[in-house]
Image (cartoon, rainbow, N blue to C red; front, side, top):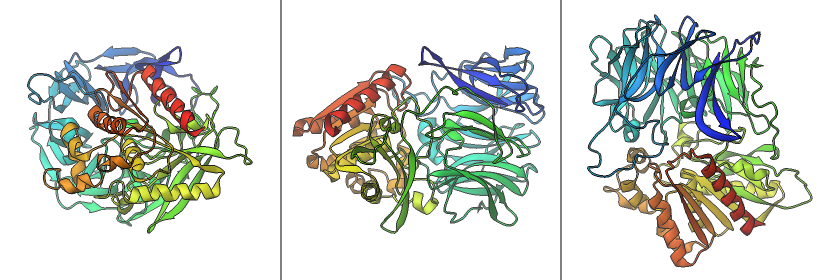
Length: 592
């Protein structure tokens, strides 16, 4: 098996990563193959492709060889069934890549004049000769080889790529002609096209998804030649997020269940999904993929962690995994225990996670920080805290931390995920507040010392919440949205908003205004710290500036920090640390 590890220098992230490989049986130690990401095994198991700006191929014990010298952005290698070619996604002459989470380029002059679409490109595994296959006008997001190696299934849309993932369709592309044919136009978003072993069917996941790469929905299949798509998990009270074919009639499915994760096999003939394993942790693919299955489905490898166990790689039969790595053996949790909480809000049963303070004393009362997750189509699952804007860290600082999976979240089926459509800040805030009430009844939380924090949609929920209630005595809003009307014209991903609001801001401004924090900003009394990246394309800095300006004018204690060069996801270790330190000082000032 192979994996990627972030490289650090004196405990700080370097922005680099290394590729390692080791036998699953543990009989030989891990071998570092080179620096890079985006790994893919050849089908015969003798070579590994990976990307470090260019495409490389390594053999175990035989070193690595650079295969390409392309000018642009390279990602997502996959070997042809005969191992003679490697497909990649390649954006020619693009200076950056990685999707809308990354920092937007500085733009001057003619804006939007040049589009660098990410195209399917074939690379000869021996010579490195490269040939672009998919049409120039389409930006390809995901793809899969046909079993005979003569075509691709792909999700794609006309560029620019960062904005149009939400309108992507399912295509097939014969390599011989490069002509793309639409075989399915989804009603909502689409992800993970997977060609069946017999070549007759293409499976995928479709549903309402607010962020590229963060997958949840129902499992669908469609004939590879085109035809009617069939929902294979209709009305299922879970959110499938990963699929892998085991046979022409059976899939391996990973799904969110409440705030947990489960694996099962979906029999397409009987229409039944048999659960094989469930655990309080998070397994998924997409932007932060940490799960892979062997081609016969008998062996699964995963990066497993929860709040008490740091990430390590495990592999083996489902539910009988064996730990492979000891990369974080010296790590110990400095935060408290966790507990799953359920409560009723309107007609919904809602779930969330409660982290107890470190060194918890049941005789004491503690302050609590509430942290709605991003998305809104996202989910809070148990995981080892990461070096970023991470609410679990505050458990180590003596706070209860409450992570609600309010309506709009994954984990309870499509109806629940869609329950906040045209209602941002309505039912989901009622869910959060009802959850706070449930926690206060169940744990020694001081109701007069409540704080709220969040990033992205969680940042919006933080900004919105302080306009709707005075229950929270301190707030930290990261990469939030203050004004949906102005946001529509500022962000680089406006297509995500149409499925949620039902129309553009130009056609129905009222639905945007009624969910905008700025509409009710004169209600705010809560001291609010606001942080954002200078080049955030998803939640642009002017949104944070707009709220800060209003609060400052109204005399509400507030600070705004804009981090130079950062996008929606911060990359600089010093910036990540500074955000947490500022947030900790802010909460200590107002909640201690």
